[in-house]
Amino acid sequence: MNEPDAEVAVECDRDVMAKKKQNIDLSDPNLASLILRLAIPSIVGLSINAVQQAVNAIFVGALGAQAIAAVSMTLPVVVLLTAVGQGIGVGTASFISRHLGAGEYLEASRGASTALALAAPIGIMFTVLLLLNLRRIFVTLGATPTIMPVALDYAATLLFGYTLMLLNIVNGFIVRAEGNTRFSMWTMLTAFILNAVLDPAFIFLLNLGVRGAALATLVSQIAAISLYIAHFAKLGGIVLVKISYVSLQTSRIRQIAFIGAPATMTGILSATASMLLYGAAAPFGDDCIAAMGIAVRLLTIGALPVTGFCMGSQAVLGFGWGARDLPRVWKAAKLMLSITVALSVAYSAAVVSFARPLVKLFSDNENVTEIAVLSCIVFHLFFWLFGIESFVTTMLQSFGRARLSVIVSLARHGYFFIPAILVLPVISGFNGLLASQAIAELGAGMIAIIVMFQQFAELKRALRYATSRPIDIAG
Image 1 (cartoon, rainbow, N blue to C red):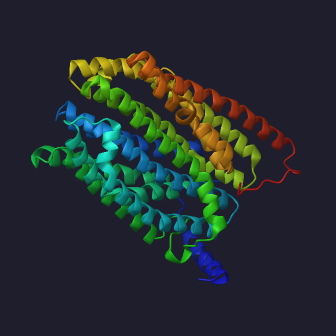
Image 2 (cartoon, one colour):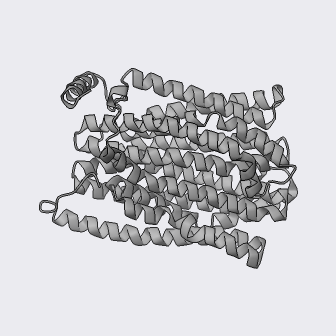
Image 3 (cartoon, rainbow, N blue to C red):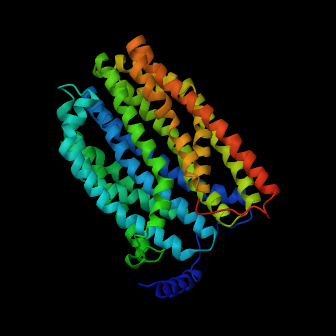
């Protein structure tokens, strides 16, 4: 489709959309209400994802320490795969929200359609590569002979649904970027309910063990992708996904890739860090690996609501930046910061105070419990800084500032955790292993604070001279 034809088509599509009731108006002057209406469904959606992981762990935990250790060892692989989707999704969401703010609906739709067209072959490629190297990956992770066959059984089954998972992640970012966070939430809720029902049925009734947990996840992904296909086929949003809008224009792909790359790199480093964490825990035995898995899972549960809030409210920042409405951007940024800090402080205090009963939900093994309780306390000492980290990263992505986003995104794992986990356990044993996480959280938080003050100062100057200082929304 050539440019004039595409423009006409999009104008017709927008006329159709105008007759529908929009989910949320991103230009709503009631900023606090708008952010909460966008963020709460996103928080619920990602929290559902965290609860789904916890439910899987609880059911798998009933199969014994080896089973939960095997599933925990698969987590770095899942994180690595998710990182690819997060990168494509973050870049696409930033692209969409900024162009919607500028009133460029066709360009927003092209970005979404192109991102999905690229995601499918990427998913297939990663699936094949990982299936061919799965055993070597688990050897690197330190899988013991008792854990290896269980981990291979679980991961190999899970990988067959990776392309669907990747597309679901990108679809979620697209609908959230246009302000349709409720649909994303209901899709995740549907997948969760299905997974929660199928988990015990596949694991225990059909006696499939850990493979049953993986199959339950696969079926839930099929359900989610079906809902997204129906949504886009019915023109359910402002952004339209069509084959005719797919465009491999270099400048468009570059915009998505540059903003998304830090998110992917962060995920890759996170997966690498998890591999090193389990590798460092392996010499201490299966119970220690299982305990690390519980501590990391609780950390993930706390991180997802904060991340969900930022994902939901990112559309407000990106839309305001694209519309060059700097007073609105400033007000939204301050509100988002206060909420993310409040969420992370509350969760940090809760886990430190109630570590033992929380750990007991995942394991009744006394040795695993003791190690996991200590790990959870240390891992969450500086978790309150995670809210600042998440906000700063989201702000930079919304502004299209890829380079600064790299600096903040890579700080926790790249600058601090990976060097620490390679050195401290050798020097201080298990205590060094625990200290690595605390050091990483503290160091990354300090870097985020420095960048935040620098960005706030620049935004204040831009507010003073808004009329004489043009802004490049493409970043």
